[in-house]
Image 1: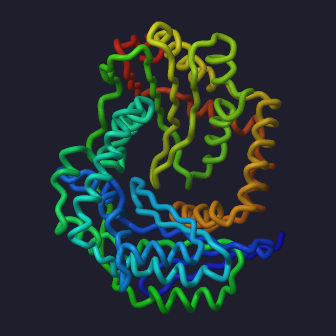
Image 2 (image 1 turned 45 degrees about the vertical axis):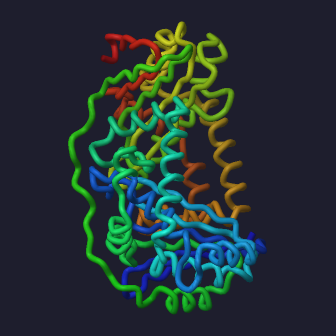
Image 3 (image 1 turned 90 degrees about the horizontal axis):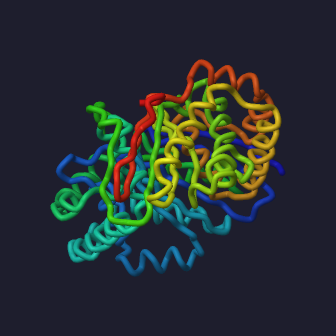
Amino acid sequence: MTQALFSHTYGNGLVLVAERIAALESAAFTFLTPGGASDDPDDLAGLAGFTCEMALRGAGDRDSRRFVDDLDNLGVERGESVSDAHTSYSGASLAANLLPALSIYADVLRRPRLPPDELEPARLLMQQELRGVEDEPSQKVMQELRRRHYPHPWGRPSQGDAAGIAGIGLADIQAAHARHYRPNGTILGVAGRFEWERLKDHVAAALGDWSVVESSPPPDGVRGTRREHLPHESNQTQIGIAYDSVPYRHPDYLQAWGAVGVLSGGMSARLFTEVREKRGLCYSVYASYHTLRDRGAIVTYAGTSAERAQETLDVTLAELVKLAEGVRPEELDRLKARIKSALIMQQESSSSRSGTLARDWYHLGRARTLEEVGAMVDGLTAKSISDYLAAHPPGDFTIVTLGPQALEVPLAVS
């Protein structure tokens, strides 16, 4: 599969990074635009998400209905999300429709209508998302885990809170868009079939004269308490555990990620085998790697019955602590097989690659080819992961539980 990487930084700071994949008939794009949940004012939590929703209700000379119709007519499969540091807009279509789709999203970034008559319908949608979290205990406990593990405001959930959503007005949304939607800090990732010079010139025409807005990231606040129980009348208990790791940009990132892959990711992984299969303690258990720009964490979840919650917590923590003893070669072999399968599937997905390119540039200041990543995976050894774990043993856990009764943290890890 013939691939080539390109990148260009425009005079206003906008970055275009693209990978041409000649075998594909599609093309996809991902905009990472500054303005995430961490930028929300404390009394207007949810503002970034609200702004994202309103920006999609008409832009440029398109009202809300025409905006949707024009994208549908181009066959654009689209999505949007808000993370700690960014608002993301993405889309994928036949390659011939890439440039017209980018023109539409240039209006979203620069000229959203933010119609007053759409404010209350958008608010209702935001409130429904909040209620959805309340109705999903596993999501609620993991949100609270991130909130407490990271220093404020980096663990803030994108959905905000009820008071914040209720208090957001149109002027707040207009100000947030003007402050955060800016070229300096925006990254556009494109993957699939395209002509590089034509793509670069088109983006220059649409976004090259976008005005710079000076900004700085929010300062770190205090970190939350490391132990918390959320009372919840239920026959089930949700358990969230987090501990510090290195960020994506760190030289030891792949070792950290590999260690998590041994813990979780497949029915032969340690947590599934030890906590669920052998003991039948829970209906769901996993661990995953989470990264901000300057810090990372390993987050673990287990969902179990209230009667078996204490044992589930004890065994899960024991497996996390045991990880410091290192990994076995056969575990690494299975991990590499899964990673290579994922890389092959990513190679065949323009949407996946456009998002990865943009995120790579944000974290690393460059994009990595799949061949480079594959070579890094090939270079992983059980010894390199074990050495990393010996130097960075899991510990100093943040633990949040949600259920009918609080659990005891074993003395060995308290």
